[in-house]
Structure formats: structure tokens, C-alpha cells
Image (cartoon, rainbow, N blue to C red; front, side, top):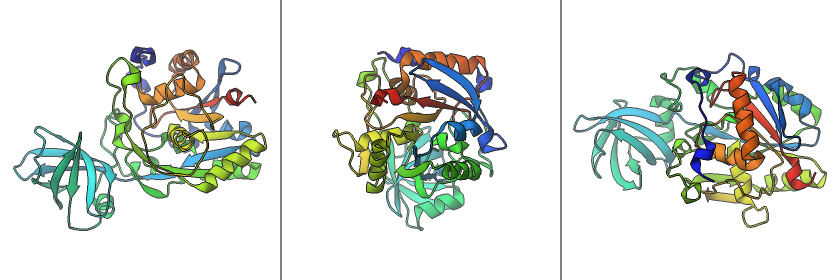
Length: 345
């Protein structure tokens, strides 16, 4: 398939620029590939159609304030977007500047952090500082790394709302947005109903916003991200399928985590990087249903959900969502795709 097969036109006014007052007040589009149809619901209705014994798998990564503004020692203005914190003193980052800094040059970030650009690694820059712990410095001086389609500066409220309520492991520079709709009340109701929970970790990198370059999607190389799928999650998935219930991924990051852990043909614990690119024709091994937000046109995320539900049905669902004026992207509404038919259920 070609990249143009995953394009669509979205009115600007449907791009959510801020979260709703309540997390669970968002809308939810139900997509059923078995019946080839979809229906409009509210997110709070999710309690009604997730069944006792189903397993919800969440990504427990925590977004760090990963954007910093500053200048080169020469005076040129720069913007730094952290890709990954490597250790207390070293990180990898994207740098936006009129001219890229050379190795050995000093950068002054937020007027307080002096660091040195040590080397380039492809499109990324290795930055080192000696003042303290990078994560602590980011927490003190950094800005919430809102996606480029949110056309405003970050606000104090974003520190809480561009974060899931169950986030616990710092390291992401973009939120696993499907989880933003859950509040503590919804989670409590699901537990009371007998729904099982499990957590993996995928620290979402800035590469998630990188466009697919080239019309032939088979030539695209996916950016690598750090994934942790522990043995306890592998056991929970096996037990869920043994009792004939669904494994439900909360977000595309969970899909990539689980499918990466099963890449050998058997699900095993995984702690390491993955650049798995899921596209139509991919054979899903573990995931029976997917909760996800609406994704950018021509993106790897839209390609993934098209692989999961079928490109034709996703095109229809997106056309319906636009007609019904759903809110799109990170702070937007959600879609639930039940695809248990893939496992013969």
C-alpha cells in the first residue's frame, strides 16, 4: 500500500487544542470489524462493554517536561526537545536552531542550565551537563512537550492533563493519549466489575510525530523506543486467553509493546528497544481489542490501526467522525475497536 492510502482531510476546528473539563467526558466511537459497522457513544460507557475477566493493558510511562528554550554561547536562539534521558548527566535531543550547534559548543538552556553538545547521533544531539540530575532539572525548568498541532504555549494545567492518572515511570516526551480518558472513578468501576489490569512501559519518543517519508510505506524505518513487558504481564495475557477473554490494549504504544514481545512467535518478557512497524498484512498475535485516539493523516499510528481493523473500515470510521464533529488527536475523543474475530473468537 502507498502512503496516500492513509491520507484524509481534517478541518482545523476539529483539532482539540485543550482537554475537556472532565477526562471521561469525551466521546467514543465503537468500531466492530466483525459486523463492519460503528456507533457513537460516550467514553463513560466503556464500563458497559468491557466484560468481567477481560484484561486491560495500560502504558504506565510518565511524560517529562521535555521542552527547553535557550541559546548557543554565540547567541543564537535554540529549542531543545528531549528524545531520551540516558543517565543523570546525559540525554539525546532534537535541536531546532538556525544553524545546528557543533560538537563541543556550549548551550545555555532556560538561562540556568549550562550543557555541552558532545556529538550527533543521526538527527539527534548528545547533551551533557554537570549541574545535577537531568530529570530533576527538566521538572524544574522544562515545558510540557505539547504536540506541534496544539497551537498554544503549555500551561500549568497541562502538567496534570497531558498525563494519565496511572503514570508512574518518567521517561516519555509524548503522552500515551488513549489513556488520558480514564479517571479514577472509571478505573474503580472497571475493577468492581471484575476487569483485570496490567501495565507495560513504553517511553514515547519525539519520533512518534515524525512523518513517514516516501510514498512506499514498506521503505519506512520506524524510530526505536524503549519497552518493558514484564513476566507478570505475559502470565496475565496467557491466563486471559485461556479463560476465553479479551486482551484490550489501551493505545497503540501497548500494541507495539505486546507485539514486540511476541515477535519471535512466542510471548516472552522484553526489556529493550523495538522499532516494530505494524502495517497492513501484519498478523496480530495477542491483542483482541484496541482503545485509541484519532491519529494524524499519513502517520505510522493511522497505518497501525488500519492494519488492525482494515483500511477500508478505518477510512469510513474517520469520515463518520469528521461528519459528526469528533475532536481529534491528543486531547481529542477516542475509538474502541473490537477485533476478537482475528483470534477466531
